[in-house]
Image (cartoon, rainbow, N blue to C red):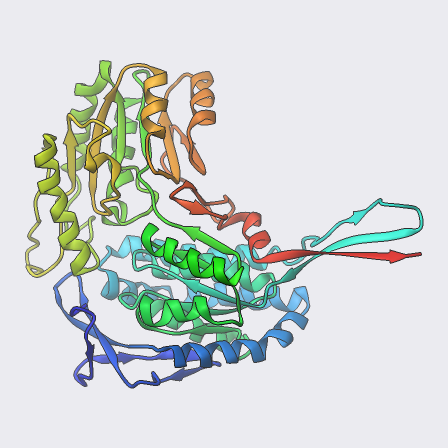
Length: 483
């Protein structure tokens, strides 16, 4: 982004809002310029939305609200499955959009598109589940509960996994009977707009899905403040999550917040060290480390510390920027990741691998970082406590099981945890004591659309994915009938 300045260049493709089933130009007529992170060159001009655009989108959603709620379960389910099919049918085109916006390798882009389709497929298949209970209160009373939609849901998503995270929130919101006004990151907006267009093609009514483009200050805040928005789902930084929380508290509306992590990956001395090393490197280099659940704190039992870190060094050597490692997606984040190299040096960490900007032939202006591992790290260092959001892992030695648990929990975050051991009793003991929303044993981060996802502490609250997500997009009404 060019300092997020508004531009009106005509030599770049323009991307506009999707409101009430149609492309809509921004009320102010201004655009933001984005860059292709693989080259650093200008890429798109994206509509710079305003509160007026948000108001139009919310009004469209309100008009669609009652009609969508009256759709029976089978009709909603068929549309959800139809959108899943349309996403898959257009996967190559969507993946190229994703690559142009985010620079991620083709395999990663295709995986994201497939995951996005799975959300609509999964939630489309859940429409037939019971949505309430009958309560045995008294012989002369018929008491039952039912789940009802909130109405207009605001969805605000980040730039790292744009379509996947949009689908993650929009799919359960829709199947619960809500309508949506979403704001993707202004940096990676193409696939979310295209998803909304495909939804219209397969038969979703106008106004059920609306996408407003622009910055968080101009569009995101307007969504949260709009009196007709009855719940907000946000994925992003802790700072912005706090700001949204303050507005939501004033309005007394519920939130789902997913705010990042600094996840611990614990390697015990009896682990399969070769497998654990390969998975540990994957854990902090997937999507160039731009994943909130990245396993960036690698806790290694001291008896195998040197052997394991050497295995990690060998695995890191297989990761090639521009081939199986994409760029940092934004110029600002590119600079931020580099700033941690200086922090690591000041902290006294030892560079085991990387620690520099990478140059990719033919993409010399790209925002590439070498996959990086620091050794001789203690958990008090900034590089062990702060979310870097780049392909950077830190190796921290520990001595005992209690040490591992203490270090793992010594964090402001609590999104996921991973541990490696052949002792299943120890694995279950440790898993029970790690303060995180998801724990993986002898495998790294195999979350599916069926598994609830969310954090403890500063990683946020509420759950995305799984059946649990539907509960976060609906509330319970109790009806008591005298008989």
